[in-house]
Image (tube, rainbow, N blue to C red; front, side, top):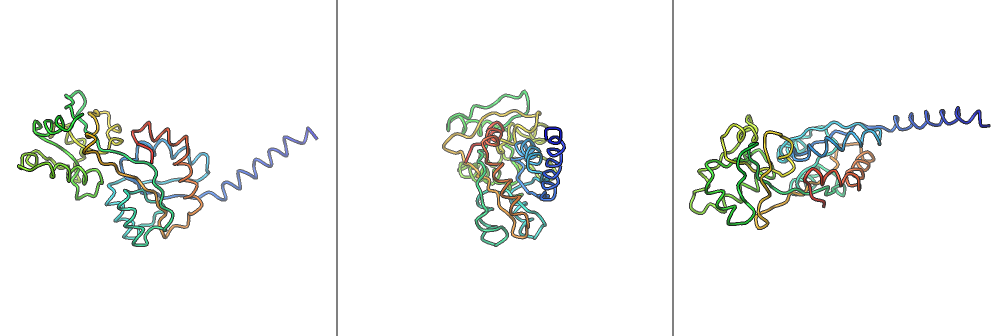
Length: 255
């Protein structure tokens, strides 16, 4: 009996591996650039433990939502709450599959080694804006949730028009970080999590609490997908205790 056990165990393990492989799926994901640091760390662990494979593309939230609206063949889309609701209402994602994963605020960054303005209070934030020769963020027309929010904030504060002349919008062909690193602006604004992806820049701090606005990132299953069970497994993994620690280490706040 004992001599036969290793052979039986080997057969069982082979059967289990074949079963996992047979149930494995490829999950195609669209997700905002702000999630790249965390998902680049998390998704390989999900693939290893689930047997599923993942392909992912990153971009501005508005652009990703439009790709789903146009019928691009994907399974999962991670978007801001507003865009996630729009796609649900349009029937582009399956009602009831929406899950808030994490949230993230907006932060200021400077090129590496440059002075970091004090923005810890409302008054200090105003002074930093008025003293800057250039203030950079992505063109809100590209659909990035953080750039839309910061654009609204700065223009609401710009009663005399003094801030607008300092604004430098990064166009599609020129990444925002490149604009600041090249000296085209004193500092820039983007999701806090995205700031830590590039070693050429440094985090200066979050917006003051009065002005801070958070983006909730919502996962949804696209209506044309056939991957309901793999999607459920993915969401369970991304909201697990272990995953929460990774999200937090990358600058996200929990839902």
